[in-house]
Image (cartoon, rainbow, N blue to C red):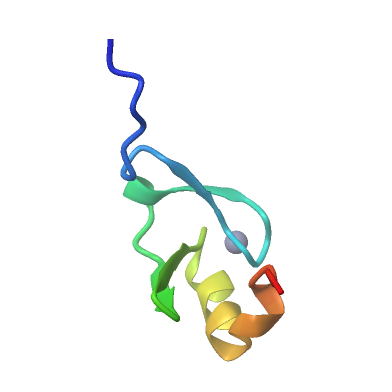
Length: 60
Ligand SMILES: [Zn+2]
């Protein structure tokens, strides 16, 4: 049994609207500070690109 979840099957959260995005179903990827973010649509991506720090959960 293979319980390993591959990155491609993982659902990712759109940091702008909070919607779950399937990585394999979206082309709206954006890399920021070495981390990839995925979006449900181009307009969410555009908002993120304009102000990425507003949408990234701050660890510190
Ligand atoms: Zn969205």
